[in-house]
Image (cartoon, rainbow over all chains, first blue to last red; front, side, top):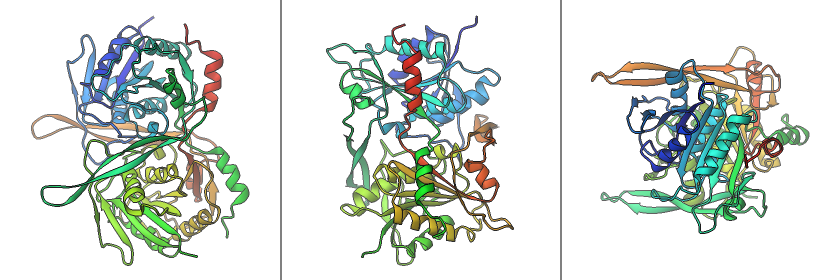
Length: 258
Length: 258
């Protein structure tokens, strides 16, 4: 049997430590090809490049791994891999990350890391986004490696439920070791923004987006609870955003002819 | 009773024709404030501006309407409205569009138009994205105005199901008049990309993202069917992406300890 073909991408850019760790783990499991942004793309959500050109250049950056850097978004990278690099081959697994920072709860929508995984799922590839809840560029990844390998193996063995990508988040390295893996739902939470108002040297106003994460969720079955309690959280995510209950409710209660 | 406060945004930029039409309709329904990108942001998905500054400047562009243009993404515009412009007031309605081009099916994920609506929903505001399935900057919007007014009135009257934003798409202007409004699910479809490979004047390769929309969905309850059959499609969209069936399935079948 030939080795599984594994596509690795991320949103922190091809030179980040997180992708280097992920490539190392994936090399134990299969043939790895990297297509990743040439610069950080955090907060890119599911952006794609329309109305602008995209660069894609091979880069010798990982030992024994074919790697490309692109000026495109994480979602662009997966599209480029499919249509330009792989052509008639299909990856057996798409992994994105390891993100330097949390992608739990509502952050899944803003996450470039997860957009690469969701894009993989749209193409029908088993796809996983990995994030470490530690924003430091020098974060310690040593506690997550065995879990990434286990989760990736499960996905290679079982495939993925239809229309789903996994959003995997890891607690930061703490004194206590990780308690295990929990399948979770996305916590009800949001970012409470503050805009830091400043003036440039010409006296013109500008802003920095800042803010705090606020968790409204009291449940023990969500990703925020899992991370706070030192579990690895795994949220299966849909790209069908339809609110089926909303269709029923609105068909019953609303009157379009009013 | 005071007039409803309505926030209008879009992704084609504050000077596009679609937003001008939408502002005109909303002025019949309430007090309108516009916060929209200063340049086109198509395909931005749910991107937000991290690690870069954001501009926000008042702009006299619509008669009797307070309007701001921003260098930020559509999602940024909604955040700026909430935290910087409205402060202690809450909008009764957030509308985004009218987009010059379709946002049916999987395009909801790539859509800047819908990201403004989803961002509104995250904040708990009743929110709607409107798109016309006609990419022309000179598209004819005359057939959609009455429907936008009707849908917005329904939302102002009934509120919105919890955790939901509406994705409303209109067929292009055809000889036959629109047949009515259909509540739909997101069609199973995807973009089949092609990358157009070119060389710059220095001989360096670059790409344009291009491609075709491919619809796999044979159902008559989805947004693609509705548009093809000259109905207005309304898809209620969730920002909770959890695949609840996936949690059950994986808990039964997978073994994390393997």
